[in-house]
Length: 540
Image (cartoon, rainbow, N blue to C red; front, top):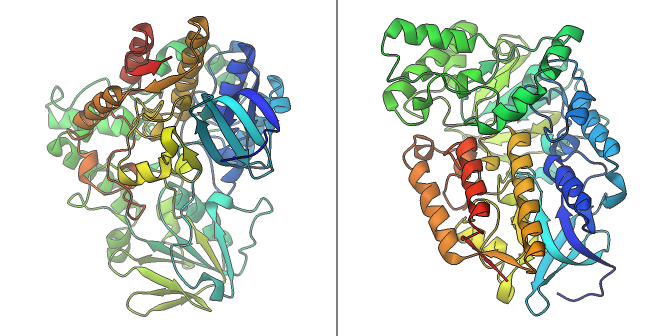
């Protein structure tokens, strides 16, 4: 790649979301010349792009925050337990403005290519805005769910209505009043769209492929007393959250094997279910990930709750309630919802299963299924997910030593070292890519803070030792992949198809994207790697 640099930097950062903002803050504070390049028109990452109706946290607001600065934490107040997208976006602006980060962020500038120059040990990075940047380090903070899956169905241009992607939802919104609305997809995003927009739609048709085990969300408003209570716990949360299994406040307190009394098991499930959060997933029994007996019992419990809410309607049960023989509770992403199931009891909502009768194309009037059935629609809302974990980087022309292509390598086999780097790509340091908890199984702020802090430490270590490059060794990468796979393959998660396994992207290599050994365990291993002098990396 050629081009005369328009700027020379120590570090280029991809993305101005949760990871990118904190990474910028740390490296700038350490004295490096840094710039963030962001595709969007403002900071916020996923909270800038995903502005569809109903978008909100499924982490409690008081834990989805930065914990490196007490005044920054206490300077922001959430209005409810699980805040919605507009409030979250305002919080991201608060962070950027309070830390004076905007002066080092270039918006509307998508990084299109990043090539490593072996002779100079530098990266040449180009953007859609015409930047050509020479940098020592290239740090990816592109996010784990930031590469939307589009163009799933042919003939879209023939459709006379409007097609909207939740991942690129227009800021001005979409008027569905009196319209025939089709929603494609019932993952976490589709569920939020359906429960929020059904009442306003003329008629809503929901195209459901994979039924989801769902949990009802309890989302109380937070008054002055509740806000003061969580802010007073800052020190406790800072210590606890990074060391739990998933980086949430919740953690497992008992096990299926210890709690052998059937009545005690049911009581424990009822108590965690009643919390109205992801606590039921993340703090009931750890064996839901490994023990078929436990998985079946917990799955039956959740399915039973769903059936009651659906009034045991045979059609709705078939379309919306998972069967254990297909997959167990918790081995897919678990959506939190608010009266989602009750939406299907409305006269203006129709649930259509496309599991065995898939959508094959757009038509002039709507969508056609494999059996020829055509649904006439005015608006189609596509909640069809992302190329998770690897998509943000592999959609860019990233080339390492000898011109090797990251896109090509990850198309063959998805491998990293601790989700922090890739052999063959010196001074490429990564967050929210495969084989780390941040790829899926973590409260994102918890894991992204940890990874960016590790990256800052690694760069600082090089400077102190008079070295200039860091790259995972082949042996280090092999060892991490082996460790990752050994843990993953002992779970039920790898036995099913989901975006956790890359199954939603045709041709994507099959591997559990997220490290499932635990957030606290991962943190310990990263710390041990640094304290031992980075034995899995070559530094020169």
